[in-house]
Length: 295
Picture 1 (cartoon, rainbow, N blue to C red):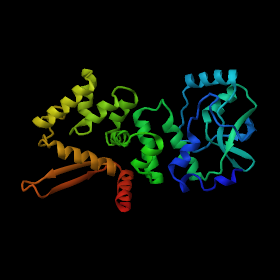
Picture 2 (picture 1 turned 45 degrees about the vertical axis):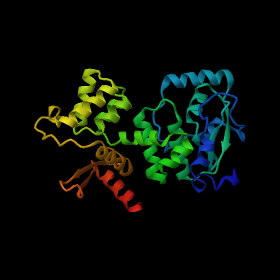
Picture 3 (picture 1 turned 120 degrees about the vertical axis):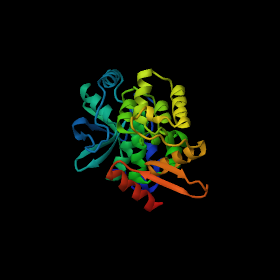
Picture 4 (picture 1 turned 45 degrees about the horizontal axis):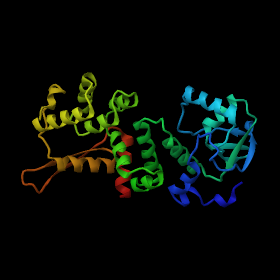
C-alpha cells in the first residue's frame, strides 16, 4: 500500500488528484513507472464508475496497440481486501482482457471512496470524446459533490474559467435541447445562444430545421428579444418585453452561479424589481437551497 498517500486528494485539493489522472488511456512510453505488476484476475472495475459505455471502435484500436506494445501506461488502483479496484484506467483493463494479457502494470494509491469517485469524474472529463453536455455534467458533479469552485477547476484542469462557465450554462437548457447537443444536431455555440430565448426549445427546432449557423442563431434570438415576437415560436404565449444587454448578462451570471434559470425584471422607478429563480425538479431545488445556504 502507498501509505504516504493518505493525505492526497481532498486533503490537498483538486491539483493533487490531477497529478495521478494526467495522461491516462495513452499507450506511449511517457507514462510513469508502475509500482508493480498485478495478475489481471486480481483487478476489478470500480462499481461506481460514472462512465457506463465504452465505444467499441476506440477500444479495438487500444486492443491492437496493447497487443503490439503492451500496456505502457499503468492503471491507478487501490487495494480492497485481496483484490485491486480500478481508480483510473478501466479502458486499458478491458482492452488488456481482449488482448489476453495476464499481468498489468499498476500504481497503487490509498484513496477513500469519495476520492475514487472524484478521480473517476476527473478522468472522464479529461477524455477527448466527451460531448459538451457530458463535460458540463462532470464539472457540475465536481462542484456539487466536492465543493470545487469554477476557479479551482479551471486552474487544476488547465481550462479557462469562461470555458467551464459557458458549459455549465448549457445545463440550464431543457432536456430536449441538451439531447440535440449530445447527438450533434446543435453545437454548444448554438445552445449558448438559445439560453436567453424565452422559448428556447421552439427556437432550437427552427434553428435545426433551417440549418442556421451559430451567428445566425444569435441574430435570431436578438431579433426576437428586440421585437418581443417570441410568440411566433410559441402559440398563445404573451411576448415578454425586451431586456437590455446588461440585464441579460446579469441573468446569465446569476444562472451560472445558482445552477438554475434566473429572470430579472425592473420596475418603472429603476430602483426596484423582481428576481425569479426557476427550478424544474425537486433535486434542482435542493441543490439551489444548498448553494444558497453555503453561500
